[in-house]
Image (cartoon, rainbow, N blue to C red):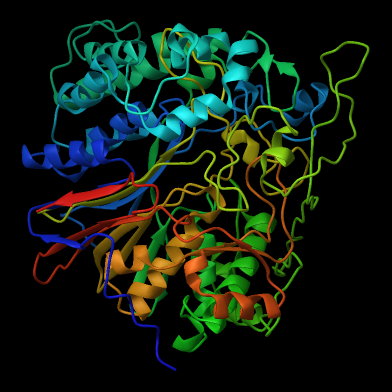
Length: 635
């Protein structure tokens, strides 16, 4: 049985050239990255500039109060994948005891109590300092101009603001002031501005001249010193002070109750982004590089390890056999994610071993599993979370109006729907991510850049969405909610613990062949990020698809695992598919026992990718057409 041939028609061409390629989830960020390359900057200058633009133009998908992870290689060491770790930890006051005392069963999906220490800005500045060539003022100029002078607002930004408008008006007035000027929701294409964020970026630039609060000394003499001064201003100066002061005011959380945050200036000052070794796996002559198991990235590697033992006809996402095999392998890997992953001692070597993969592979039958089946690791007890198909927060007690009574009540609605996450008729708050029907309600961004020298970077910024928590007026952004990916039960691999990183879903990918980086790719999508990237990897590595052919091809994912986002529900045997997968394939999956949700023709996956052939120097780029927002550029 041969691999399904790709469609001859693609929504866009796979770009080709030799100078430089950029691909992101917003055309303004792509244009920014390419402009930096055209003016002599390298891939790291370009990616950093694009990232700060994404903070401005996709505020519903990421923000400076959020986090990011990246994986990159340099022209000097093209065979060494490096992880850029921009995931902040839980603050010192974020203890299970504190959350329980607040009457909470789960970490909320919105509100500052769910905020990890912001990590994105420090990570980008670290990358720029160590591997970029431009001055910080040059890199931030693009974002400053868009924030100060305005940019045409996306329709999805408007719809997000509309969804939470009641929350803003009644409970988060600072957010209403920032995102609903004059009390109204902006219209699609309207020029919107964020002068407070522009001033924040300008102050970071000024810190290099010795004008910052945290580093008010002689002006820095080198580019690296100026960037380092900005990092200190962020973590110890006016930003840290404003963050710590803002969270003291109690405000509404997704629990339906009011709480103060616990972030302090000491928490901000105690975090520094870092560079780490990547986790890797060899698959069909390619090395796939991901973050460590403090993120979900190695689940993709585990899935590949399981699939590696099958013939190619089991790896074709466009067939019933292939889609079934892929879905079942993903369930097994994601069950291990729940059981073992976290910011702790994770037995990754064992989980990626050939013997363990073979034992997991034997569990795949002709029928779909409706169970959560973590594997057995010697000396470890797998954690199995409470499996909820529906959830609503405990009702507030009548006596004080503020503390919820412990317990719970079921809310009708499919997991991930507005009914399941916020109650019928209530505003949706936090990040539902991609609902089980494929609707994108809150998400993430992505950036891929490769330059003519061979520097290559894949990065996924997220968190700090405008709907995450009340806006901090003097900064022009809010804090994120990444702590919702931790549990409030003791003894789990991802229990909420001060100083520990939550198990993030952010999972960019770098691919190497013959010891050299050849591709960078990634996607927004919460728990679906690696599932959609897996389809791309199988189609390009096994099926021989071009990047754009692989991105355009029909996508699907499983929902048969506990979600990483509040309210942490799952759908046993659930699979979400694009209708373009075909009636025959979908009917075959249903006969095998998959609980299918049809999502429409062009709804799943928001991948982008850049490629470099080290033999010829030819570069390629491709971007997702779904949502008419992501673009690639290059020459």
